[in-house]
Image 1 (tube, rainbow, N blue to C red):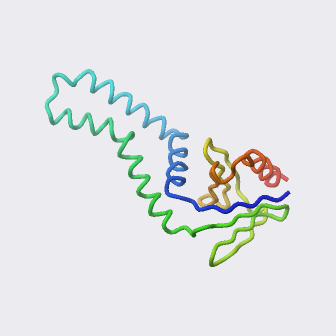
Image 2: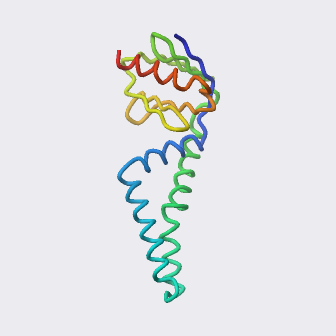
Image 3: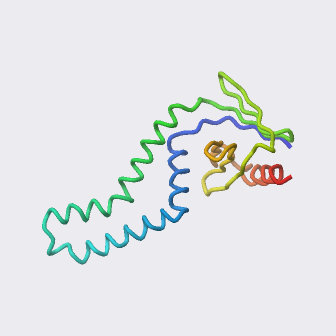
Length: 156
């Protein structure tokens, strides 16, 4: 079996990946609990609070709903600028083959650390901190087939 895709990882793709990572962990649960607590506290205290306290309550509510996602997007934007443009990635029985304008590399299946399927993407990890983000837009109807193929190659 053989799969070929041309893609470019965008800042939005990296942002989504980070958000999946955060909100799929204990830190994300703490963020949600904190935000709900801040909303409830704000509702209870709002009428009697001074403008200074109201400002802190609003900041507390915005911390994980606005400020953190914006900060993560800014980091993702910087990361995306360092990534090569128009990457070609190919999957076959020998491994994964990556080609960019300046270089190419081949990864054997034995070197792949894992794969994860998210609602909007598939992430193939070549190391614990590096990998390939293939969005649903890139994969199209081949998402499930590619995922199952890579899983079979990693386990085999």
